[in-house]
Each structure stands twice: as C-alpha cells, then as structure tokens.
Length: 334
Image 1: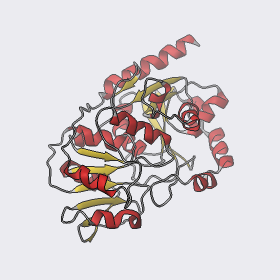
Image 2: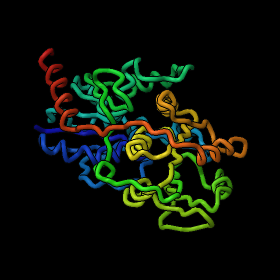
Image 3: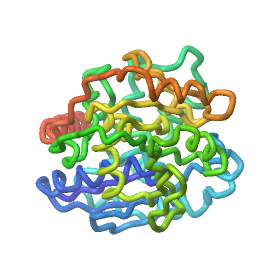
C-alpha cells in the first residue's frame, strides 16, 4: 500500500506526533510525507518527500496571534500551485494532519482522504468548547482541512471516532521525578514580556525553551534552551510543573507524566481556548495572559496542590486499524 501523510508544521505538535506515527505507518506500506508550513522548529527524524510553505500562524510578542503577519505570510497562489502539483492519485491512502494544501488537492481531484489528529475531534459537537463559541474558529476547525473520514485525538473519548493522545515512547517508558524546576514553553511570548516575572520565583529554577536560542544559556534562575526533543523531554520528565500554551501534545504529555500543568492559550487561537476549556472541566487551571496584573495566579499555581488527570497513551495499532476500517468502508460505499 502506498501512503501519503501530510503533516502541518504550524508549531511543533504535529511534527512531534509524526515522529511517533511514522514507524507504525511503515508497517502498513510505503510512506511519503509532506511537511506543510513554515514556523515549526523541531527537526524531523523521518524522510520528507514533499514540502510546501502552506499556511502558517504567527504570533505577536506577548501572547497573541498576529493576524496581519499570518495573512501576509500566506502565499495563496503558491499554496494552490503546490496543491495542483501533488501526485495524490498514485496513493492508496491519504492521511492529512490538518493541512490545507492536501485537503484542497483532494477536493479538486475528487480523492478520498482521512483527517487524523487533534483537530479532527472537533467534527463532533460533543468535544468541549468555551461558553462563547467563535463562528470563525468553528469554521476553520471544520472546513480548513476537510476530508471524507475523520479520526480524532483528544483528552477524552468525546465521540466514537476520538482516541487518546499520541504520547512519545520516551514518556511512556519514563520514570518521572520532581527535581523542582518549572519548564516553560510559550511560543507566543518573547523573553522581554515575562522574563522579570519568571525571575521573581528565584531560587526556583526555570527551564525556558525558546525557538531563537541556539545553545544553552543561563541567566540568574533561568536556563534558556533551544527547542529540541532531547532537552525538552528530559526537562519535562524531571520538572515540578510546566507552564505552556493551549496546544494539545505538550499538555497531554505533561498529564501522562503526572506533572503539574498551567496553560495559557494563545489569544485569538480558538482551538487552544477549546483545549483549555476541556482540561478546565477536568480540574486543570488556565490563564488568558501572563503579565504583571496576573502574575499572582502563576505564583499561586506553583504552591498549589497538584491536580492529577489520567491521560492514557494512544494504542496506535488499534487506532490505525480503526482508521483503515473506516477508510475502506467509505471506499466501498462509493
């Protein structure tokens, strides 16, 4: 079987999931991968056959989505050209992890595809949303990467096509300890926005992961790390708690490791607010912003009792069996 796997590269979560999924897909057949997007910082440890700048999200300096830059950076004519050039007809199975280029190509060519990933779970209205829903946000989640079949991932099985998060093997096999430091991964915050706040919790140590850092640098109680799987995985396994955005992979991994978690959804990114709402229903706190007006909430969280939420790892063999069954059922019905 020939498999086409499209991986969205807005942020690092999709890349991280692809690292785990790729060996399982290889068991099913020959796999060709498209990386679509331009602002992921993780290196890939799998071969990439196709690349597209796709459509990516960019952020301002202190916690929000930069709509203007995201639109300017989106080269729509290039995206359409990339979509038209993809030879998708030669593949038996097209798996799309929320990539517009592949979805558009399938739509134009009348091809069947499977959307596999976290965003697919929002095809169900059982998946938690904030009280005030966003029409634009809902439209993006449901229409941006439309497919013929959906296999979702989320914190809980809110519907029959939603499975547990994909957890890195290193975390599944880890023996976590609490070495006292706080791990910080907030891609939408530049250092000058919150550096002084993080220094206020000295002597507690901070491990801060930043995309522009090339080597480890220490300043007072803060150690700056480049965004890398090795450094981040080790920091998370041994941290006291993690301060991170409202994505899906990192909070899932933190809870799987029984770590204290505080989320700050990127302002303007509706999916992240949905994720924070879902975990809030399970007892996990979140903040809308971190600044001098809200920093006491962060300080209190460090001292609070840890809230543990069971977060099982995905059984990828079982999930892929379901994906293939659904895909073949759709093909037979055509």
